[in-house]
Structures are given as structure tokens and as C-alpha cells.
Length: 258
Ligand SMILES: [Zn+2]
Ligand SMILES: [Zn+2]
Image 1: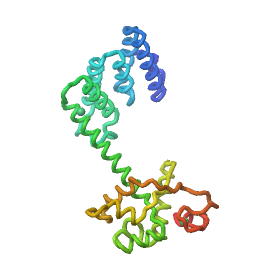
Image 2: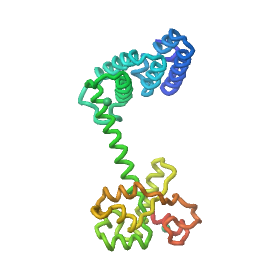
Image 3: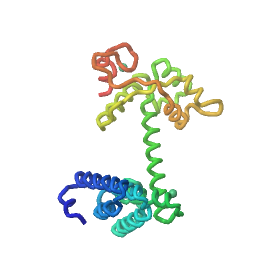
Image 4: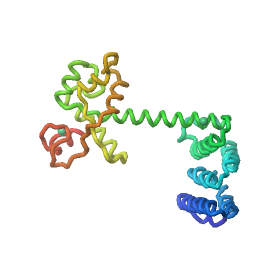
């Protein structure tokens, strides 16, 4: 392997390698396939080192019409990573780490070549499905958590479905306090662009339809997921509170969240 790359640490090394893969694509495009392949040969050992190397190396090989080479390299790298890894099948894409990226690219390249699934492709599919499900669950939980019921709507909602106090708070103050705390937690976790969805009993009932149950968690998450009316959070300390009480934020929901 090219010794020059060893001089760079993790992130930098990967950036340099990505730039070299880009150069290889250009060399392919101008008809210098041998030079392009020499460049990519030097990057081959990185397939088992950097998470994004499988993507840029196989993309460059695809530009050169070399999906078969990509398949061979990715297969070899996948097998060597699997050989070093003992224990059960990875439970998630996160758990698989670099292996997930190798499996995913290999799966993609083999689809492009019209290959039928082998055991590695089946594992790639399982991990991709689990990742998609986990993302969908996280998104559904997030929108349901940030559903705000203005005072009149809140009272009507709990009047009709008292059990929903568990999901939204036992009274309107508790409801606002919960949302404020949840928003603070998300902000501390590094999320920006936070906003609240505004629920209405009429909207929820229409969304549930005649057969649906508005109190069902999945129905409510589905309803929240298609809402567009939003309140940006947080307001300025001296601005009107997001809850619509008419008080300043600093005297209303800001302290409620503590
Ligand atoms: Zn597949
Ligand atoms: Zn408020």
C-alpha cells in the first residue's frame, strides 16, 4: 500500500483517500484507465479501515465500468472483516460498524450486476431493514412527543379520552411542562430547528376516520406525522410564550421546564 497514506490520521486519511478516488474517476473519464486502476489499487487496503472507503472506491470503479472488480474487492474485504469478528450476527447497523458499509456496497454492486442473493446479501438486507425500522421508530416517537394541544383542544381531548392524560399530561400545565422539558432535552442532545406540532381534536378525529380509534398510539403518531402547523421553539425570553397563554416565555413555560 501507498506509505504516504499512513502519515495521515483517521479523518484526514479518509479525506485524502476520497480525493484520490475522485482523481481515479477523472482518469477513467479521460481514458487513462491504467492510471486510474493504479490509483485505486493503492486504496484497496483502506476498504477495511475507513467506513466510507467502500462507497468511494466502488463508485470510482463503477465509473470505469469495473463493477466486477468492485464485487471481488468488496467480497474479499467483507470476508476478512467477518473472519476477525467472532460471535453472533451483528444486531444492528451500528453494531456491525465498518462491516455494514462493506455489506451495503457489496449488495448494491451485486444488484447492479444482476447477481442473486447470497448469505452476505441476506445479512445486508436484514441490517438495512433494521436500520430503516429504527429510523422510522425514532421519527414517529419524536413527532408524537412534540405534539402540542392548545388549552381548549387539550380540555376537549381529555374530556373525550381521559386515558390520554398518560400520553399528554394530566392537566394543561403538566402538558406544557412535559413539552418544555422534552424540548430542552433534545436541545441539550444537540438538536436544532426544534418546533412543535399543533394538534386539534377535529383534525385527529378526521384523521382516525370512522373505523380508527383516535386514542390508539399509532393513530396519534400517524396524525402527528402529517401535521404541518408548527411553532418554532424556543421563543426569546421576553417574547410571547409558545403555548399561547399571552404571558412572556420567561414567566410561563421557561420556568415550567425546570
Ligand atoms: Zn437485495
Ligand atoms: Zn407558556
